[in-house]
Length: 257
Image (cartoon, rainbow, N blue to C red; front, side, top):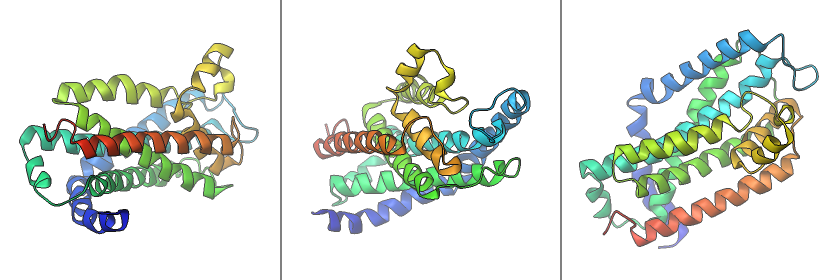
């Protein structure tokens, strides 16, 4: 089965995965939006008059793109990872295994649904938080590019986590000790230029930093590093993680053995 056939084959599984999170939209979309608004209210209120990163940009406006991307990344990861681990534990995964879907179709369906959920949450966060301080869109093509790449990267990473984990405790370990720290330490709430040199260098090893910085470039036309560098790093990370996820699906890692 080639990629064209895989797209056709992935369609039913993709619809199933989208309906899975959409039926509980208040929890999967509404709750993350509320969390982001609370972050904005707390940090924006405390730091609005004390922090300015880009000239002419208030801290609340600066914060909004970071919160949008953070919410997008965390929910894209949660969608594919939670779906796989739940299916494995409840035994429902056997029905997908019995279908004639290729590993490529699995990948497209799970990552595609994760991207949809991530973009839906991100759009919701932007729509609500922009009411407090409209951030503008200076270079929207960068914002769109990094939003799509971010959703795809975290969807593929969620696939890897879901395949690796055998119980909810292991999934929580992956989420709490890898995904959450990487998103919080990626420049969501600050510019890395405000950090000491050691922590600046460490931040540049975090691919999530380039996602946040490139996405923010789309709003303000300013960023800590060149958006082309960010695009190269994020694009490379997406290709590598996707290749690993595809190989694990192809071998049936922890789902066929």
